[in-house]
Length: 189
Image (cartoon, rainbow, N blue to C red; front, side):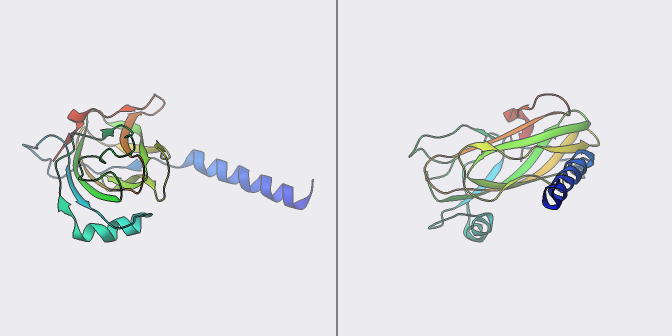
């Protein structure tokens, strides 16, 4: 076996071993737990002339204005020309989404998102989804999280949509089980 092939094989095995022993991210519940939440999520929008990355979205969001609340995070892929989420436009949209996610069962769970184009989601103080670029409606990497107790967990999400179609979905499931769409009733603000 050549030295290059052997080194490459050892590197791949080491990365695979590291990935399988990574501990779940420990989420922190909201403290104190909120009461009297409105359903859905709060959202602010900005409309930059072009947005191709999370850093450009964050920069544009410094001039954001509140938009109509989101009912949850299950926004199917749009047709070309349809508005993105609850914004005023179909293209060149940056959104800052805030609120809480109610998780009913403690334990280890898996979270992923489907997104077109990019987003970074923080839940309970941990980054649980991220894609910094442009793509069709596709999954982010699944992340294992440790939910210490049932309750509300703070959510902060930065999202951007550049051109053509848009989507944003959140899925979750118990570790070892299939992930499911998060119901609208799991969100409050």
